[in-house]
Length: 321
Image (cartoon, rainbow, N blue to C red; front, side, top):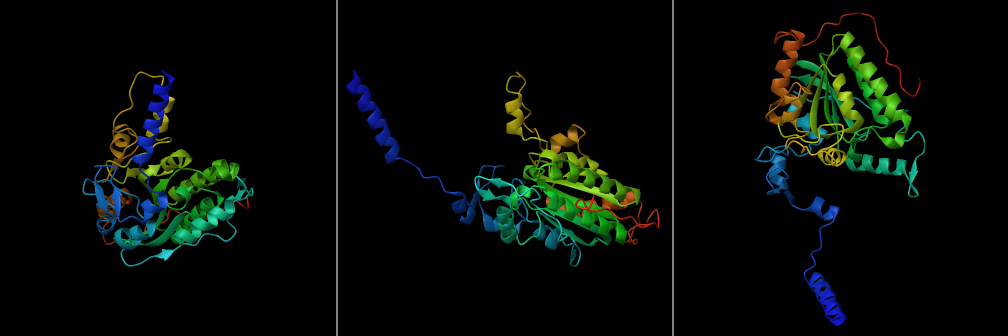
């Protein structure tokens, strides 16, 4: 009977080779005019999505470049970019993996996105309010927060203190802290950022966090340092320390199934982990402006927050501490 088994094996292998389907590479997918929407499982024209700021008809929100967000959706009439300090080192321990230097990969991300770090930070007016906005770009190495990103954030918070802005807004979208940065990013950077945010609060500068899709790891822990935390939309997903797939694997021995909306914006609000969610990223500017004015007790005509102290505060750089 061995000849039958051999024939069957050869026949099945021949059929597989005949009907083999070559999957498109990541480059092919990136260059394609079409993209599949995870929300409705329908193919969408990238050009149509771009016109609607990467929001599908089913309200699924794709990642949005922070520059587009700042240019079209947040600031009134232009903005000033806050540069990343030159001394900020993205690779303090000269990390090497599989014979490749981490710093070379970081430089490739800089060329790809045109950003100095994974975070684009700008200052300007939002419906008359003076704000500083930090936009996390997932295309920049999943927005991994290295020592460089931490220093960039500290420089932005120092700017906010010096200029007594009304609000510091963070548009989160990141896989978390950069593990290649060792303790510099995992503990020192996180601690410095939280301490600096507390200093903003002491000076009556409101801190607001907006969770975009894929905000996980140590950065998700950092988000709770904000005065108020919101999700970009109801269905924004992967908004917990670990995503649904990883969490489901950890709980594989449990009989209880993971909730259908686990890690989504609506679920976070329902469970008290965020203050609410927006229906669509196009409404964030107006609704956030109203929220800020209510929390700061500012009438429409006022454009600048009152500082609770005239004492200048300096936030030390992580590298210098």
